Amino acid sequence: MAWLAGCASQGTLPPAVPVATDVATERADADRAYAMGDIARAAKLYEAVVGALPGDADAWYRLGNARFRLQQSDAAVTAYDRAVQLDPRHARALYNLGVVRLKQAQAALMSSAEVSRPGDSLRRDGARMAQRIARAGDDHGRDGRSDGGAPPFIVEPDDAIPGNK
Image (cartoon, rainbow, N blue to C red; front, side, top):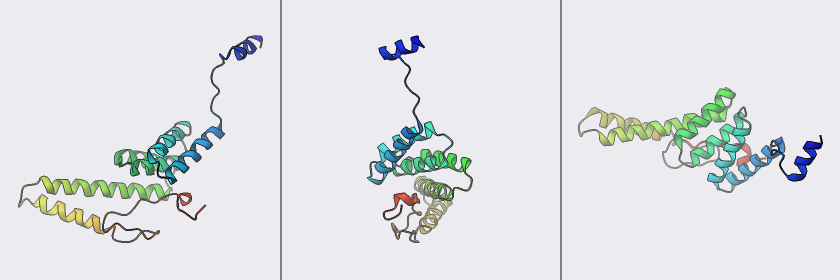
């Protein structure tokens, strides 16, 4: 006991293990950063949250959203996959996983069409399939957004939509 008291007075105690309130604060900070458009900061904070709470499916979903907004599609897929592994009924993570994979498929098909020789069926078929994927996004999302034919938008947590709490 005397040894611990001596360590405490010298400032040599090991750092305290972060408590749940620290993680909750970090998550709230991440949510605020995301809402304010500081997506890089939000992603970094969400990474810390999933590091502290690796079994939190919603934290992985939110990390996936941030990574998607940073145009890190593969990393977004990894985060959404993890959310779904943890909670197979996480509808938003499943939906966003589908959206990101659609966007990846569209990009791959367009690339295939661009590098194929003129007259090659891959050129024609790749472009046609990419256009079909683009038309899948012609419907407006629940918040009325549409970007003229890109695959659908990812869905945000209800608390990220203005007016919802």
